[in-house]
Image (cartoon, rainbow, N blue to C red; front, side, top):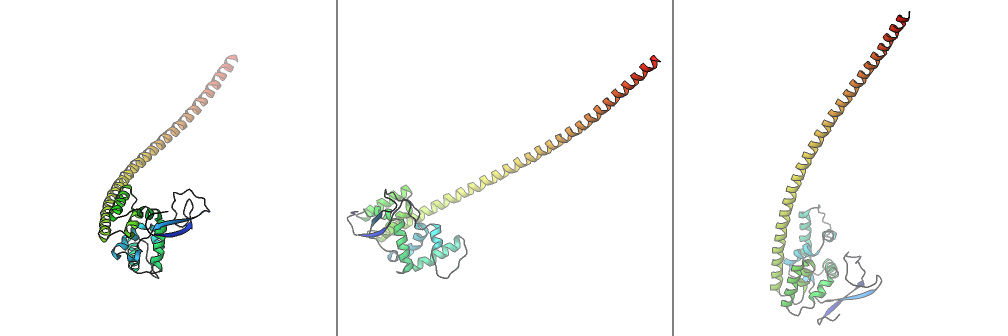
Length: 250
């Protein structure tokens, strides 16, 4: 793949679904085919200003990947605050070239290789900004953020601009999320009230049905007793008529 710039080579077995990172690759290759993917040479994470490390960890890694990161012997309870504390401690360690920073670099390079290749076509920082804006419009932020923050043509001014845009975007999404959460809570309350009304109506209906069933049972009992009396009276009348007839014959 000729990109017109220096490239590094990431070798691996590519399948329809990558077994290591769990995302689809738009390539028509067989499951056993060996393929060499070339991505542009880019800045390692330990050479990026440390103030951007936490945003990279929070945005570019999934929640499961964040939980798999090791912070030594520190044991943290689950929860957003503890996860933020854990990521903050990892972000400090990323300022140095270490095993952790190398593994994280390799993970993100593999995960966002296609985005790195896309940004590799940029010749200037202006081209990078255009690609970034295009990705923002399309909602492809994770890979684009990693690619532009590590690109060799990215200036410190562009890094800061992208970082600020991401903060604004995150705040907007947070506001939208809170609004949707509030709306969801209101809808759940309304649904709960409706469920209570339906349950009350069902109880009233069942009570009415039980009352009607009881009345029907009582009426059946009265009908049975009335029929028994009528039958007894009919037998008595027949016996009286028989005796009268016998008396007349005598």
